[in-house]
Length: 459
Ligand SMILES: [Ca+2]
Image (tube, rainbow, N blue to C red; front, side, top):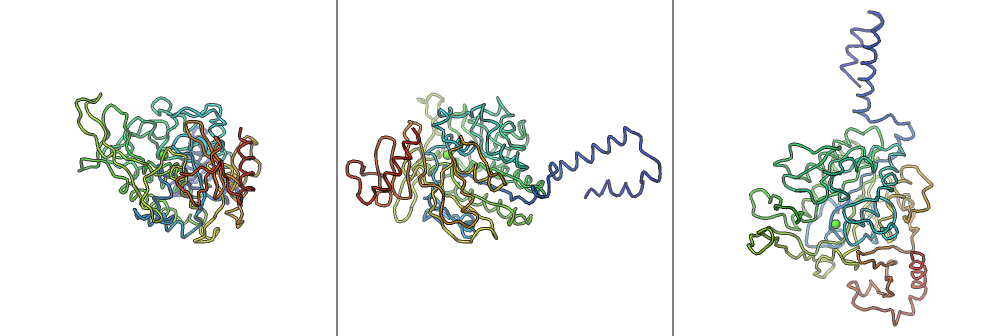
């Protein structure tokens, strides 16, 4: 295992030359412990070592309409489609309509409204030890996060990801610098050197592959919080660098292609390490597809900084319709996100599921996969681990989402009931143009009664 130490031990065995002085023994012991921890992580029991790894890939600003296997035809997503063919495509996973509340919900298993809607770019200090990462740490998992952080300015609080349960991290903070070309990254508590000339998504994936390699003999939980396919930061003193050799940023389609290539690298690396059958891979999105994306910065003497950003609309062809990305809206185009789960040998290949899932469900699901049965009552999430273990019926009868304006909804697979009383039939009216509250369909009476009870329980 440690050839250098092994060779020396044979040649210069203590039994042949007498006991080592105390200080040398202490140094040797420290080196062995350090190497064991560095190469293989902290010691784990045999039971813990058998637990599955979890790699969750959270794309930024990617709704179902951008993904081939969900019926999007504007972009090619071969790696993501292949992942779906190797596992289950969930057809009813719902996020919040924007980044920050989705991440609060994902990390805590609770609805942001119940947490008094934490401010953008922050995370409640009192919940830092109650995150999904802490949950997995307590279960003996090595934990890591790479890519987008969103929860603080890391230059002001570089220890926050560690406090929140991540052993290792490689992240860009919140509106601090570039995330793509020449990225400004923080890694394990310090500013990372040597990123000039690099493309951020390559570095996030490299970091995670190193993490997988270092923890092959210990269960791990990796949160790949993708930069892609969100456009560049727009509120820095100077515009971030363009694509090398071009006078513009990546467009949305190019970012989707890059995202798919990152997913391929993650899957291929787990395959190469022989960990694919021991690893649950999940791919999802934090909100619907962006409605516009920054194309370039343009000189404008009238503008405050002497230049302004030019944004281009994002349209996608989806199930026979041409639709604009709906990020920020509570409609399907803002909240209906992909969820693909794959673990060959443990989950049927090429299946689909109609089970309802929302973003509070990931924490209890991962805890269950890691062997924890009991969870705090305060959680809003419902584990869907049963669906990964052969069950066909989900435990949820409704899913939830909310907007910054404090409006929220509950829904089942077909009908949606808003906090203001509005009712929509998503099957016939996906863009929510016709409110049915004054004449709800008679056939839906039972389902709407259940949704009203759910809404009441959230007040
Ligand atoms: Ca987002």
